[in-house]
Every structure is written in structure tokens, then in C-alpha cells.
Image 1 (cartoon, helix red, strand yellow):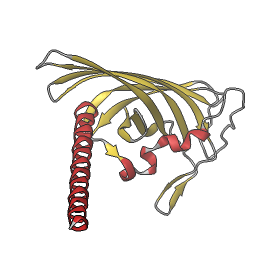
Image 2 (cartoon, one colour):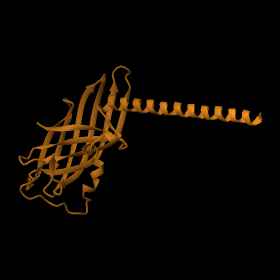
Image 3 (cartoon, one colour):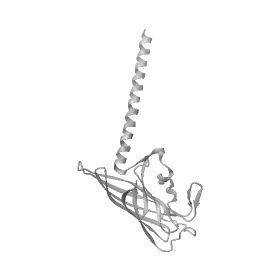
Length: 214
């Protein structure tokens, strides 16, 4: 009799633990969904976890950023050479919507630095984005798309920080978001630039913006 009662008690206990675990998993899933929704409300479409492609995870290529005490290997034709300082500006866009202007400065030494500034509105919020970044060219990477390669493009990678202020028009509140920014892309043979600006706070998600020459 005692063993039967003990067995029933054990089964009830296991059932209760299993139900509690299920509720915990559901709560975690709901919080994850709300987190992504919040990120999308602030930054636009957000790509989480394993769904990100390599180009949306530029931190995986941080080893291409040359330390300040080392020389940067310079390009030779057919890649574009940089014989004098070069400054380029590009529009920043996400899904066809303007997100400000990025300025990139290419030095003769191979260093690259720049800024991004934008003011825009989305979903009853006014945003101000400010970012600075620095890095370098990398002649070792070759542009490829499918089975096609293009030796005439020069790769660059930079890293920095961003600050984004959001003003909610409905509530009158302001929020500040800060994180990492990566600007990566290609200097083309005609000295135009194409690439991505990628932002993240903890490298578990990213939001990417396209660079488009003016």
C-alpha cells in the first residue's frame, strides 16, 4: 500500500515537473519572439541565429583587420590601386528606405575609416544614427558570386561602434541603443563602392543596411 502511494506521488511529481518545464520553454519562446519584434521595431528586419549568412556575420572575419603596428599589403592591377587619398560617400538603405549617408576614406597606406549619420522615421518613431569605424583593405580576398570570380574588386573590412537614439512620438520617451558596427564591401574598378553596414549588440542577431553610391 505504501509503495503504491509512493509510486503515485512520484508520478504526480514527475508530471508536475514536466508541466513546469513545458511552461518554462513556452515562456522562453515567447520572450525570444518579443525580443526579435523589439529589435525589428528599432532596426528593421533582423536576422537571428543560424539563419544569418556569412556576409551578415562580419565578426567572423575580424582577423582580416590588420593591427596598427603591421603594414597592410597594397593592391596591384587588376585591383584598383590607391595612389592618393580617396573619399567616397554612399547612401545607406534598408529595403529601399533611406537610412542616412556613409562616408569612407581610403588612405594610400591601405587604411580605411569612415562615418555614418542618419535621421529617419519609422513606425511612429524618429531615429538618429551615428557611427564611426576603421579598418583596412585586404587584397587576399577575391570577389565571387556563384562560379564567377572578379579579380578587379578590392575588399575592405572595418569595425567600430554606433549609437542610435529613438524618440517615440506617441509616448514622448527616448531610448538609446549602442553596439558594434561593421562596414564591409568592395572598391570596384571604377572606384565606386558597394557593400553592407551590419550592426549588432551581442553577435546573436544582426541588422544589415546596403551601401549605394550617390
